[in-house]
Image (cartoon, rainbow, N blue to C red; front, side, top):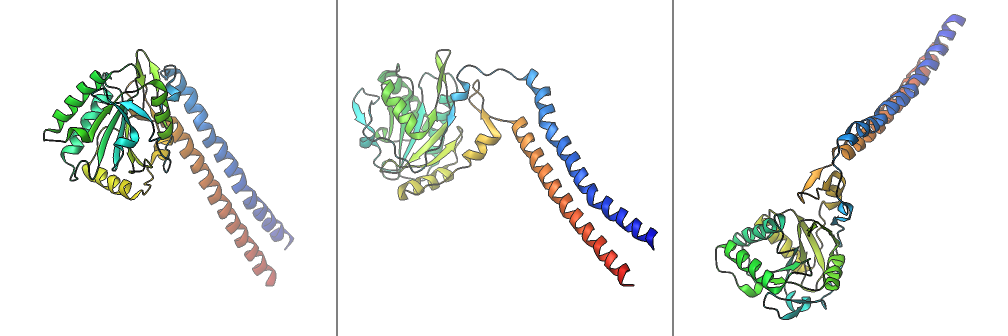
Length: 294
């Protein structure tokens, strides 16, 4: 009887401790993975250019753009945002002499307009603003001509405006929508997106990239008309992706995602082992009670 009791105590004590030791081992091994991955990846990483960490979007949903900001249109006339944002507005921050991605963005907007079932001027307007204070109305006119031709159907010129401005106005507008850009090699590193504004200047939605589905844009415009904020997956995108300063595209951040997945997996395994250990201890206690009652 003493031997049986001793075996029961030994069995109970061992099974109660094993899950904890297993959990600690798993935590140590799994949490070490991101460090090992980092040490293996870091030597191969391409250094980012100066200012790359400044590039991105900090969404300002529900905030308002300053409608009193003054710019010059493609004809050199002074206009304020309040004069242009009189309907749901698609805002695109670009620069007209951009060698690659800005052309893709403007082409994407033109392609979207081509398939959009909405009335310009009433249902929406488009406003492009240069982030380069050195660009002129002539640059804006050239970009407008190319963009309107890309639509491949008649479009009211007054409903897609191309603006230039001085640096304070550009920076104030960029800050109001959370658009962070940086100068590099005579050009700019900048995010690629379009921003939806309600008629009162409220920021309601962001769509990222240079390819747009007319149906998605139509829904965003309807939301802007009602002043309804439509959250995006930007936070998830910012966590899982980073902006590549060279291509201006989102690239998958494997190290960050792998580290996070490892920690979550470790936490899930710890919870599982603790629950399993608790159930095992309960079964052992019940077995002891059964033997003691005999």
